[in-house]
Length: 459
Image 1 (cartoon, helix red, strand yellow):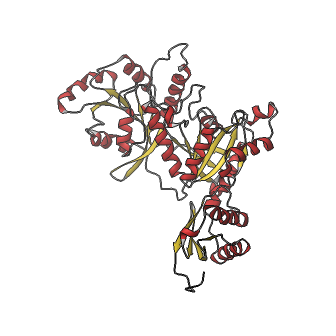
Image 2 (tube, helix red, strand yellow):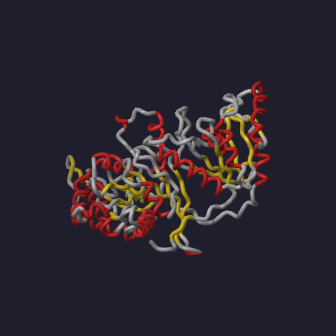
Image 3 (cartoon, helix red, strand yellow):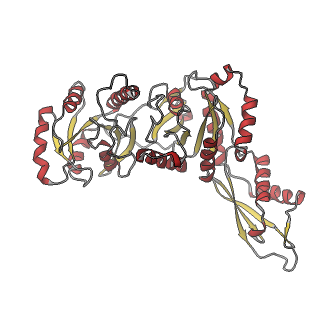
């Protein structure tokens, strides 16, 4: 992988929320950023990776980092690696932050884990405030005095009722470094999606060259959609991205867990807001029915798409060939014949740089603007070479076409009667456009507008 690929240097204008499980960190995070980004649930350990988002207070913008709950690992348990991964993520959040908000539960009282977290924070040079959460009314505020034993200022707050937040921010925000000028470049939004355990988090960690998200063989390790800034290159030529790691998608009928349902909703929202979606497939398992379902959702959302076949080093060692896998993809996902395929290995780093190049290519395709004159010549020639079939003695006629949008590419077609256009002929016109203009990985939408026949009485 090229040395120019590196994570965006964190701007130390961030506030990290830390604490033991179930004290309300994610609820406070959502309150601070003004929208529900982190999953909030009574189940312990829902948040695992770091979740970051921009917040604003009185016109001052800063980053907020939500972290998983710190707790002692259960020796020998299959989730032991996840617990260790959460601890590592918290350490990184502390390193990236300019201030720390230690969240405790005012109704539960001082806990041994609160002492443990406070001991860790005393080793930093950062300002720390204690948010005594769940102070839903003034009658419990006096309970916050117990937490002064931790050695930091205590503020009773309520994420549920938005109590005390302005008081906290009036102290925290002025302590942050000066606000930097906004960057003019808008990052490319890239959602990485797929079934559980196809290597989404490993792929992102390989790109970033650090353990940004937790990787584990335990299915469902990633729960939130994690947005991560990333750049390729330096100076004016640098390309900015936001990588979105998502939870593994399973059939809705198999989801019985509330947290997993929330995770699926977040993944679907990530797809909807992405510029390009990288659908990760497992090279050893081959395309599955669930891969087809996920691909159909991406097409339904009309997003740019790249097919990434991960673990190619293992498949190749077992005698697999790209030709055979491409044929299998064509059979399993015939509606994605327009999507480019890149074979890579997150484990070894093989072809990782090429995956970014392909994503860039698709991003350019979904933003393509087609010349109106050439567009009309191509479509009229297509209709002449292969006339539309007649329906009830009437035939579909295309008068004029013009592009009216990108992401997806939207082409408005003025026709005699939209209902006369068969689906097969619509697909034929789209195929001709791809053959002429390329548009790899880019969705094309034909918007039909009925118009009186310019020669009445003639069909």
